[in-house]
Length: 103
Image (tube, rainbow, N blue to C red; front, side, top):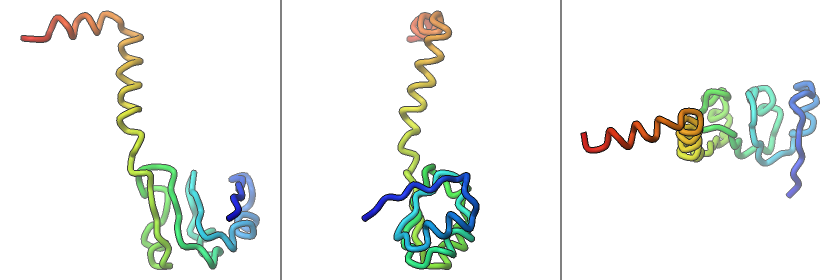
């Protein structure tokens, strides 16, 4: 197996030329259907997010290519980080929450 990074700054035709024999593609940005149509050996597209909004899903599935996401695995750590930042910015919020317990 060979891992080949493909710059998003390349033209679509250049990206197709690089990916044409790829078995799978990791999509980190919008993944155009034209790119995937140029990949004759493609079996899987792994998306970098938790949704299917950056790919034309019906077109990809019609080509017989499977599509996977990361299943929102980062949702809990992101929420924890947000709460931590809120408490860091507003230190009195932790005291207020403590005073409200038992009401």
